[in-house]
Length: 196
Image (cartoon, rainbow, N blue to C red):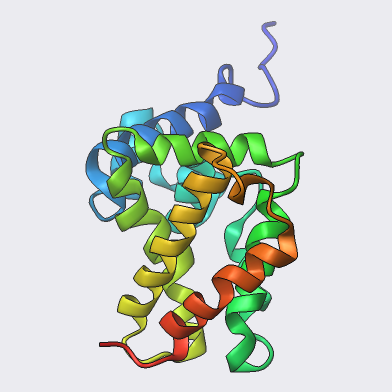
């Protein structure tokens, strides 16, 4: 009598990788808005419910596809707590604590370089901004929130490029506290100050 195989179906360990590969391809080609769980599932040859099982929401799938070593939503979650006129300092403190960590910096550099490649602009504008950056402005209840958070992102992307990707001195070796003291006033104005 033949025995029925038990446990996971053959090839199941590769299912998660197939979903991630399909998601990366879709996010790069279609952007965040143009990517659907159903389309990713179809490209990976699985049921959409399995994508939800492995990754949860589309936001979670996007962050998993970006291969970030940390969940940036968790890193910036506490930024909204505390005095409103110090939010830029808290934001930069959280940002630098992750980017200056030698254990996670290599993976973050890979993501930053991917954003600079063709199609990366859509990953940033249609993915990272609405999933990670824009919600901060909404949680803070900022007027012109989307505009303000885009300005903040422009400074942060410049900081990433100059300090970490290109390693331009003296910014590349500027102490943590000096980076905050230099950038916080500009970010704070973008967040809560008067805009033209």
